[in-house]
Length: 566
Ligand code: AMP
Image 1 (spheres, protein in one colour):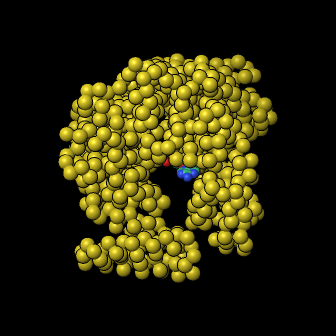
Image 2 (tube, protein in one colour; image 1 turned 120 degrees about the vertical axis):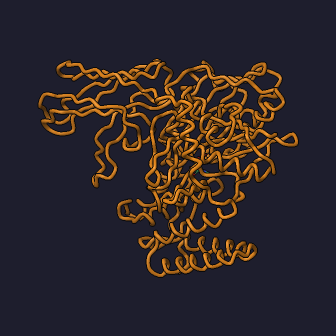
Image 3 (cartoon, protein in one colour; image 1 turned 180 degrees about the vertical axis):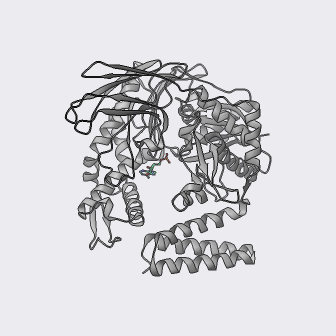
């Protein structure tokens, strides 16, 4: 019986198996290695996972969930098609989909897995991950820290001597740094640090701003479809900068009359604040581990955004060595998890330990959002205790009035990683009265203290009068008992998955639907005709005709997406 290795990621997940002496990646039903961690549930209770679900994020936002890994270990419930689901339940759908793909690939039942988790996941988050496995019908043989999995994939556990190394994980929206040590069969995380608001998307954002400012446009002048096109073009440009110094963007927007050149040199210069921010957690982790760059034997890269060539050269300069990047940075964690699973099957599993206990989420308050002219965003999140801070810890920040003669300050406390509070979890509120004064002249200091038992204490002091306020927040999610777990299982089993062989068709139809919603006029008509044609082929149930139609339909959608059909 095989044990598979799973990387249950925030944006994408992947599975692999140790077979014939090597880690083998498992393709999903669309023949891809990465399965987006996105779940869609339709009104009639049918579940879609992966790319087909991802296509529906835009068209069916109320029935589709993504980035729920951020809510593991919390009581947060997400509503999909009017029913609520916890993060472990949603993760269970992703795991179930990977399990089925593995069973299909291996031709046998798969009931056991090694699943990776971030090194900074605390006990509650780890238990939530094990529960997700159980709900998906997988016994979680063990959890493995993501940087440990990456290290194993690079074979660091096979080195005879004592090794110290750093794992840099730059994904779409987060940056995680772990300093690790391998010694006599034990892999230890010595220090972890990170930036929850820094990832590949921020670099794309720089190019989007540059492109729009060249055209003297701002984002509010574009419709959502145009914005999405700009985003996609700039994502492509960012990748092309790995090989080219200048990129020519042909006109693709109404407002763009001529070809625009983008220069790598400008991109790198404009991204300077981001390059600077990348260095901070690296320095923190090194300082925490009491190491210098020269003490490290290896630098390992994980996450899609570490493919940026300039990132690599910066890291090479910092550490005076070429980073290890010969394995696919998006798949290396799944590969490592499968190697651990293989070792486990042979009773040779490595010990994987985390030394420090850290605060698993950022904790902070909501603050006034000056740029929210249309009132669509709501308050901004101002983190006071950053995720990954070693606990117990206590941090303070000051906040000031935004209106003249403002006499009331309503402080609301949140946990989470999103820059808008509406996407984070509210923990409680405190109202404070202030003397009348000009805006910005009255304010409070807010001290947050978080202890090992998950208790959050809030101390607020009015700066001018010294008046104090106190609130205690119990920040431990309720623990599930056997009965709750049985209820969860019953709830999930009432939902049906679409048959595997239909998922390619569903992914194509979902993509077409998204394009239909984003277009008008002739293009919309053309998409509609293509949908009807594709559906009519599906009705005939002739597998070879369906296969050919899939290719043709997909190519047609490519041309529509590139906007060059008419
Ligand atoms: P992940 O969440 O690990 O899949 O990382 C996704 C991020 O990696 C996105 O921001 C992508 O833009 C970025 N990325 C993927 N491939 C490349 C590439 N070839 N060059 C630069 N960035 C990339």
